[in-house]
Length: 109
Image 1 (cartoon, rainbow, N blue to C red):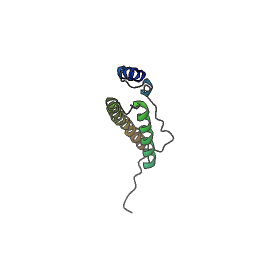
Image 2 (cartoon, helix red, strand yellow; image 1 turned 120 degrees about the vertical axis):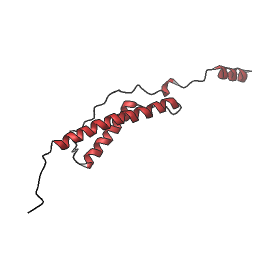
Image 3 (cartoon, rainbow, N blue to C red; image 1 turned 45 degrees about the vertical axis):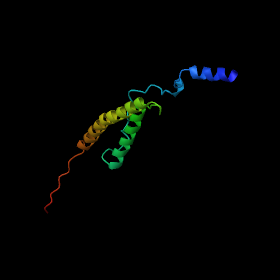
Image 4 (cartoon, rainbow, N blue to C red; image 1 turned 135 degrees about the vertical axis):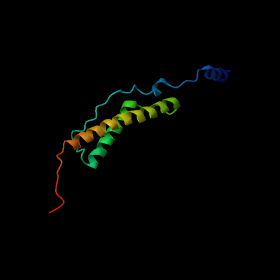
């Protein structure tokens, strides 16, 4: 009889996900520092890209594996956020390269 009551109680309990499985609210803005990088080099640009990706992941957060809609929302957030951040990075790189002097050298002797 006890086993039957326990099974009935378990069957009647609502099936839900634990509250602890939800991710914490994502931060909506992160500043990516790049003054220490030489954006005129490929290595500097790659370092900036890695920093941007880490910031994108932090800003968009994560979703639990069982939440397919949440996973899709995070994926879309990351794609959109990275696109905007990459445009800003390209502008920063362009600004750095414009600040350089243009060296004109004759190709004739």
